[in-house]
Image (tube, rainbow, N blue to C red; front, side, top):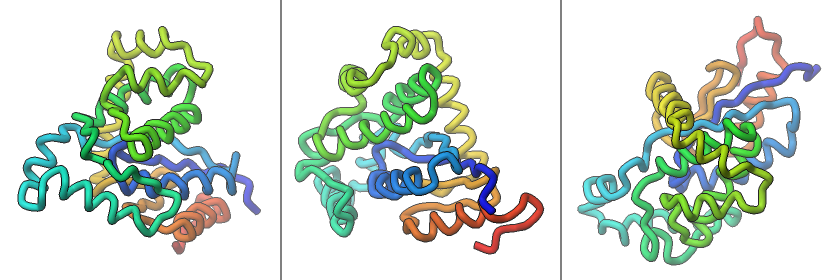
Length: 220
């Protein structure tokens, strides 16, 4: 009998293509399991310094144009992961950290669920519309359709509380020795999944945790 709620700590970087690909699976998981799961949206530092990352890791593979091709090729098999043809070329955000900071402020003001929805809108703005999501003006425009107090969000950014929450996420990702984005930590570490995990595998792991008493280990 499924009578417990499972917590999923979902670590990602908003600029990571694999997290954009995983978005549809995360949405489906929420739709299928509803109030039997609690997803906590947490962030990790993969694209904190975009130009350094591309100029070092992709210098010999074509720089930004080469990375853009890699991103488009990665997304091709996934019809839900729409990627603009000019991705990483017409717009090159300098960092993912501003978006992460903004989303932590949203979480503190309006809760994790709305913050998760805004994270999807941030990814969509970049991958579908090539908007510069390192720009706070762009980020502020994304919350206009939602009932969020902009002054409270700004205050939490200005007084450092949102930054403290973000640093907690970054530290936790390091403490867990997570290999990359996205990563799923299920039920206080009983299961850790990483990377391009298929939906059925993700669902099976969560359902196993829902079925098993706390004293039993998951076989997934």
